[in-house]
Image (cartoon, rainbow, N blue to C red; front, side, top):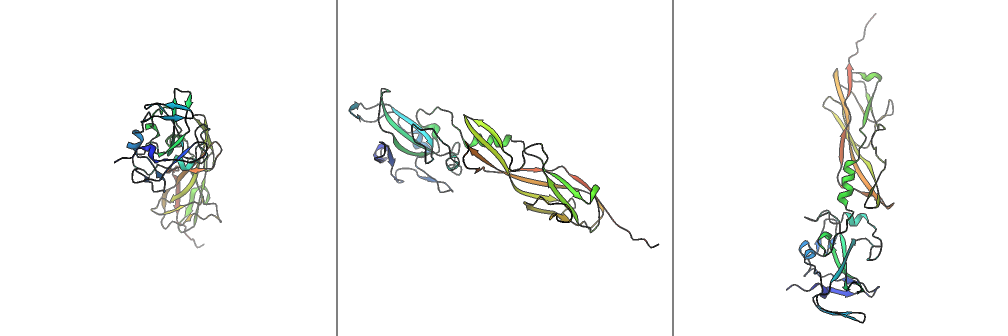
Amino acid sequence: MTLPLAGLLQPSGAAGRSIISADCVHFDCSISSDGVQIDLSKAQTAALPEATAGGGKVGTTTYKPGTKYEYDTKFRCPSNFPGREEIPCGAAMQGCKNIENAGTGDVYRIWRRVDVDGKIRGPWDNVGTTCWPELVPGSHKPRLTLAMIEHEWSLTPFTKPQLSIQPVNNRTLVTLPTYFQLSWPTTGYEPGEERTVTLLGRTIKIRPTLKSNSYSFGDGTDSGPTTSLGGPWPTGDIRHAYNNPGSFRATVTTTYAGQYTLDGGAWTDLPGTTTITSPAEPLLVLTSTNHLY
């Protein structure tokens, strides 16, 4: 037997709100790999009633069965309650990312109250949390989602790493240590550089972060992944000695991670990475010959 939702609501005594009891026998309390508990499954969210099953009272006003509910959904963040400005937080915007078929990947708390003729309204009840706010009755307002921020991240033009080599003129000798250094051109966004966008009236800053560099010396050998940018002779820590003469093409591949902040809040990691490879830098390796005079 499925218990009615109202039967699981217990008054909290705070501003007329209610809190939901932890009844996972009757609710599908999904747990993500991040330990986030979701009270309502997709089916249970879709089955939320649009109106009351029975009658009751709001203050001194009596309402009949079938009286409409007013619903409100907000990011599950500590400061978010009905009637207040919604403030997103990183935990809510990624709370459902590891739950199967979880829509936008964001976790919301559902609130509702009895709406008598649009004039007399009861206290807000906390119905529970869900990954499917779009299925809540009356949901129609545009929502800022992690997917929107990830899309802006994908549109960010990252700077392409540039590789320089010493000795000068990209000419070196067999067995001589050759030094490699990565630099960031001015075109595009380099690690730590912020891009600002506005989505649904929210100010969002996005910045790439350096996850790793992998150097390929063109002779079948590599160095990395590492966070080092290398450096010039004699202090650079990315160096390589070629065993054979010839023409080679060296590259560096940078893996970017990303972060975002909402309305000046704390920086939060974005899921996933982006990889960009530098233009190939030609290198000529020569042999040296000793002459007796």
